[in-house]
Image (cartoon, rainbow, N blue to C red; front, side, top):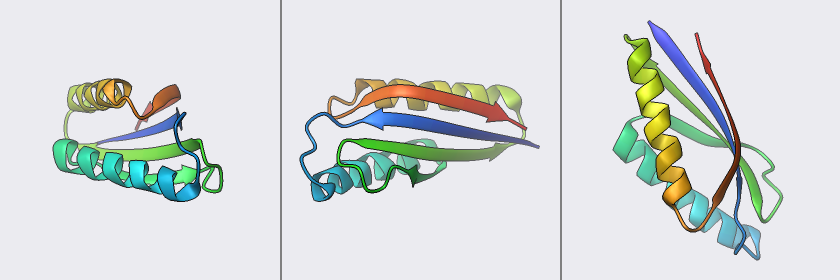
Length: 93
């Protein structure tokens, strides 16, 4: 069994309120959950308008699948024009 945990720090340049931030994050989280079947939540910077840290987790039986899934998720995030990926950290157990 392999557990992948990824922390992604993002910047939302056009967000001008917490409501606008929540709208974008809700959409992004739902799309990622549906497309990649991972758990995702906002884990830090909850009260900032333009920044957020997302935590993602995936459990699988192949390490290769963890690497592939998080590579695709990061590509998905980087192509979303509403946000910028500032930093990410991936750990596999």
